[in-house]
Image (cartoon, rainbow, N blue to C red; front, side, top):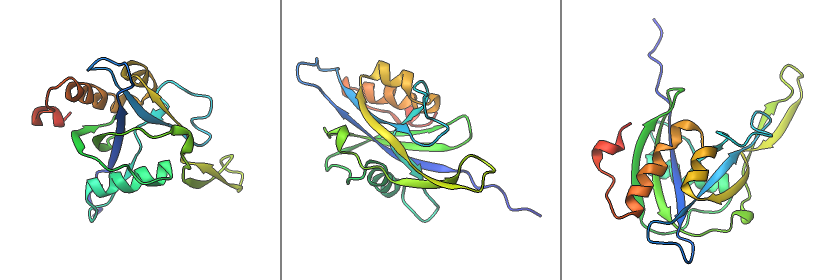
Length: 173
């Protein structure tokens, strides 16, 4: 008898900033273009909130902090984390995200790397960056770039920035 398949879980941290001169509801988010050969040359639905998988022995917030540092190459900034809840992506992965108001220079990122056989079946192992670039975008443009399953977090963040609260009913998609 096979064991039941464990649900894959990821946790991430979505930084946001309010550019000078922006109205109360104006903000930008820091998102990451996924690295490796599968995402090269793609822009639409090829970006992600900095996040990563975690196991049953790790707290989601600790995983979000760890993954931000691995992907951005610098520790997460200090500040108050805002829970944006979780959402299930089309592939079945459940993603939990927090937002943090902070302003980092995207050009200072030093992403981690991963190794994979490329081209497939060649026997050649190559190293690729987990993320090949970070950039700040207004929510509408970020939504066009983010993978579909993560766009809900922009709506939840918008509600928070506009002075509303992210309610428990919104924490589950």
